[in-house]
Structures are given as structure tokens and as C-alpha cells.
Length: 113
Image 1 (cartoon, rainbow, N blue to C red):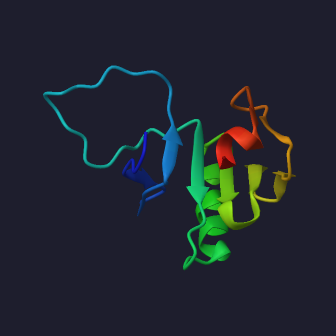
Image 2: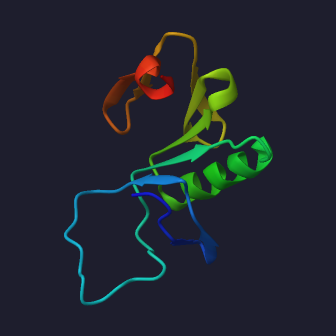
């Protein structure tokens, strides 16, 4: 899901992308702020955004139970996959992103080309 409104630890926040378990939408009852945490969140650093803001969002998501948080730096074709506040792996160049929590491997070329 993109732009999912989350209420996490009494804070309203919106990840760029949220990976959630498969669900059936209830079209009769729209939820404005979702309280169930996603499996993974993905934040993409925009040119005028600061990295500290994304790191703080990742810490918030992880403390709420999100299993992995990706921070994508398009300008240098790099992805950081956080599984804890200070636990992360960086993927760059022509490598493959491994997210053990999500159970996926994706070539960086597929993401950045």
C-alpha cells in the first residue's frame, strides 16, 4: 500500500510504502488511521528531505512492531534495511537486496532502472 495513514504509538505518520498481510478491504467502512502495523515500511529519501527524519520514522515503526524498515537513497542507488534501531544492512552497486524478515531478494537493478 502506498501512503497508508498509520496511528503508531499515538503518533500519526504515513510511510511512503507499507507491506501488509493480505486482507480484504471493507468498502462499507473506511478506516482513516490504521492501527495494525505493517510487516515492512519503505521510505524513499527525496532531494529536499533530511535523512534524520527517515531514521526517526524507522525507529518509531520498529518499536511498534514493524519487522523491517527500508530507507531508499535513490541518488546513490542504495537501500538500507533496518531490522532494529541500530541493526541494518546496506545494499548498493549491482547487489541484491535481502530482507530476511519479509523473505524477499530483489536485484537493485530492478529497483533503480
